[in-house]
Length: 257
Image (cartoon, rainbow, N blue to C red; front, top):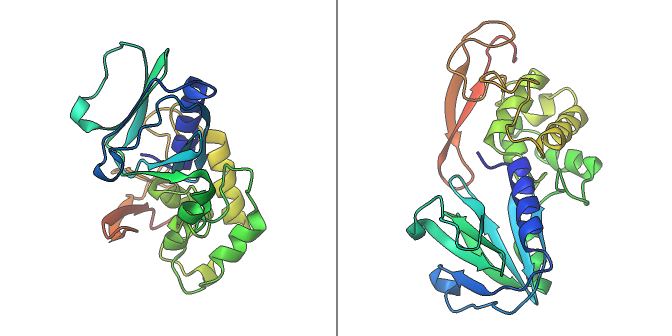
């Protein structure tokens, strides 16, 4: 599931494939930008910002978001794609590599000087050079009655946490996702934990919060059996997502109060 660490890893792969290279083809399969052609422009860099990706090409930035189902693949020139072509939203080719964005939730092209307009609402990036734990703590504390689970998901507070980390952080803090922010004993501990988890996982192929790499890599998220710590059955519930969809949250009713 795409979260800040996944997007950071994706940006690194794309940057290694595209940085400093001239685009020999640019095919954006989104109606609003179908006529945009950056062929002949040089890719300066690919960076992540929270769960957003920016491919900086010439005077433009290609802004994409994976949402729930999107992904970027990198292929050698002429290599067969691992997904059907109709799922491709954007194709960027150089002489050696082809980067394809499949089922991307958002694709837009903006001028480089307009990046702040599309990403300026984000809080400090947990994996970015702008990371500031004090600002993140202050942002979380602005609405003390808000459930901590929802506050952690809000990218305006701190950028990079998704549904997996929300459940895992609440478990490790020993609080329910529904606990009001004002009742969380130590918001700085929550912020520091989030930063440490994403930092440790940003270069791993498989995310882990338990230190294990097998089916027990996560404490509660996705578990349908007993809690790894106490053996109580893990519970799951639904709550509104940030785009009007329901999101599943997991918790242990014994370990979290």
